[in-house]
Every structure is written in C-alpha cells, then in structure tokens.
Length: 369
Length: 136
Image 1 (cartoon, each protein chain N blue to C red):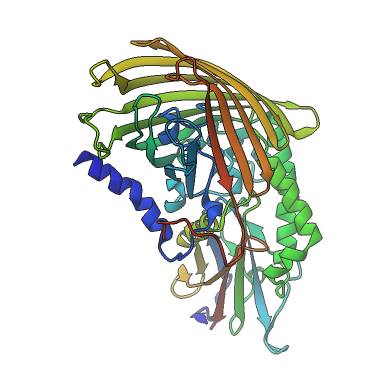
Image 2: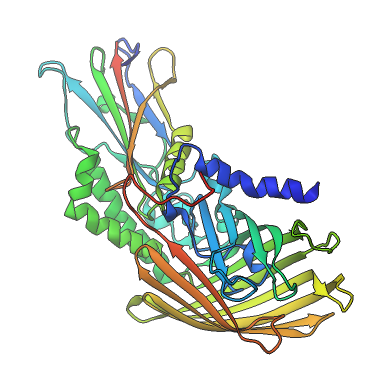
C-alpha cells in the first residue's frame, strides 16, 4: 500500500495543475533542484538554494547515463510552495521581504531598518514529489522510484546597504503609486505604458531581488522503490536524507549580476540503494560533508562541488557544474564528473528548463492533460 | 452600489486592511453632486499604502457627507515580480481573502462593504479593488 499511497501523492499535483488546462504551459517547468531529485544524486548539483517562489513548478531530468539510452526524460518532479494557499496576517511588501521596524513607534518607512533573518522559513517552504526511472548506478536495468521531499530557507541575511537601498527604492515606488492612485480617472492599464512606472518598478525589483549575503537552507527527503519492473528486489527503504546547505554570496563592486558563491553542505543519509553479490539490497548509514565554489557571471554559472561520504561507505562526489540561461525562457544545467556510486566512471547529468511563452497556446506534455 | 446610513453624523471614517506580499495603495473619492456626480480628486492627496499606519481615516476632512457617494479604490502591484500567472492569481486571491473595507460613524458602526476585483497579469501585473457606496 505504501508505494500506492506515495504514487497518489505524486500524481495529485499533476492532476490539480492540469485542471482547466487542456494544454500544459511549459513555463511552469523549473530546473531540477527539488530535494526529491537531489536525494537520489541524479540532480546536476547537490547544492541548491530555493530561489523560486513559484506556487507550482515541474521539473524534468534526463540522465545521459544511468541506462537511459533513448534520450527521453524519465524523471519528473513537482514542487509546491504552500505559502500561496494560506492566509498570512498583517503582511505587507516590506515584511514579506523580512524587513521589520527597528523602532515600532516610528511610523515612517525609515523605521524598517532591521531584518528578520528567519522570516523565510514558512514563506519559502516547499514540498516536492518525484517519479524516477533510473539505474541510480546500482541496478542493471532502470527501476521505478518515487520520492517526497521538503525544503526551506531557515536563515536569510541581507547586507545593511542592501536594506537601505530597498527602503530608498520603495519610497520612490510608494510615492509614485500614491500619486497615480490619487487620480479618480486613473486606469490601471496605463501602468503598462508608463515610463515612470517602469523606472520605479525596475529599480525596486532589482533592489529586492539582489542576492542575500548568506542563506542557510534545510531539506529532507524520502524515497522508495515502486518495485514494478519485474525485478526480484524485495521492498526496500530506498533512501532517507536530511541536509543543510549554506550560500555565502560575495558580490562584485557595482555589479548586481556577478557573484562568487561559497557553499557548504552537510547531509545525513540512510541509503538502501546498495546491492551485494547475491543481488540483494542492503542499508547503509552515512554522512556527507562538502562544499562548492561557484562563479556567477550574468547568465553563466560555473562551479565545482566536492562531497565526502563517510560512515558505512567511504565515497565521494566530485562534479563540475554549469548553468546557462540561454534566453529569458530557457535554462540549461549540467553536471560532469564522478558521482558517489559511479566508481571511476565519469557521469553526465543534464537538466533543462523551458519557459515557452506562446500566449494562449503552450505546448502539450504527453500524458499530462 | 452599496449604501451606508450616515445622516448628519461626522466625522465618517474609513479603514482598509489588506495582507499581501504586494504593494497596495488605496485612495478614496467623493462625488460632486453639482457636476453630474463626477468623482473629484481630493484637494490634497488622501492615498495611503499598506506600509502606512493602518488606522481610521476621516472622509471629507471630518465634515458631513450625507447625500454624497464615495468610491474607494485599492491598487495592488507586485514590485518583486510574480514568477508566473498561476502564482500571480494565487497572490491576488490571497489578498482578496484578507481585504476588508470598513466605514464608521454611521449606522451600524463599523460596517463592512463588498468590492469588485479585477486583475491583469500581462503586460503589467496589477489588480484593483473598487467599492462605490452611497452615503445616505
């Protein structure tokens, strides 16, 4: 019953998402970074910070190796951000961005000069479900697994000058909107063509979306074998993992698009994906510790990550990663190097995000509508 | 159109509350009965946003408003950018569930009023709440 229940959980977001849509908007696809994928070591990188606040995103992953020879993606995940379905109390634009009044009696915007570094715990929490068909570098033939995972940002720390910049740009935006709203004949569609609106919007948008100085993220995930591929494997744990990752983002002077990221990650893993000479699966317990250095230059990010696994097994993962935003709607991600269970072989992991905006059109994903 | 019994009471006050990750700015206008009932821009700005003090605000600078009509409009925008239309729609629904327009000083006091909501995702992400209330 357990796999059946998990399969229902996995399919539910797809069913909800497709309600009312005869065609699936591929813009809802996101890079394959959900914990449900990361747990199984098939994501291009094991070090991610949850950047998106999309209410629902779908992720598609196609391993170039792993027994997948036809090139058709067979690994899918859906990730949901529950915040958008809740009723937050007393929230405004500044508190949503974790700014709070350092002096409660100060009614002016200048009172917002401190931050709640724990403010994203619920807002950025997400739950993910994944279906995978892969060898996971363990099996001779691909096996079906399903995973559930959750992640959130437990600490987000902004730079002081960035907070001041947000307040400064917010004042301009706030005043513009007050002036606009004060005209009883104002038509909201005029905002689309207003150069002044575009200016204050872009300035504030850039200020609030700047990379934080430090983020610490927590993720947990669980996976299990569906065991429906005519295999002889008995029901297995699959994997259970919990991990913390941090990102220290050092910016370049006068450039908000380029950063050096120093990541650290620690992960506990109970792993049932081990096979002995008798073709029987067995469990191991291990701890992963490692880091990643990444240089982000506008649309291109290049990084290298190294994780050491200690415990019942001693392995390591040494992967070079690359991410390139081909256009505003297409992002390529890849990982190349040695994965934990790949022995001396080099592995290649590729992910692709489509964001095809075709107005009323959109593209159809077979089987999802 | 809703109506609110105010008689010659004064002051009549207005309060708008909204909980949203977006920026919400509210303005209110009284009509001019001598000018085809056209809504007038107030002599000085009366607009306020959801980061301002959320208290009660006097209508017509505290003077009587019997026989007039008030239009209250809240414009909601998302300066941090909504990543897609689905999330935008959920954010607008979230704001709608929290939106509350109240008047006080008449009968009953306070009283809560309905509103119309319309939203646009493209080319600009914006929504507006509008209430028109006859003050009798």
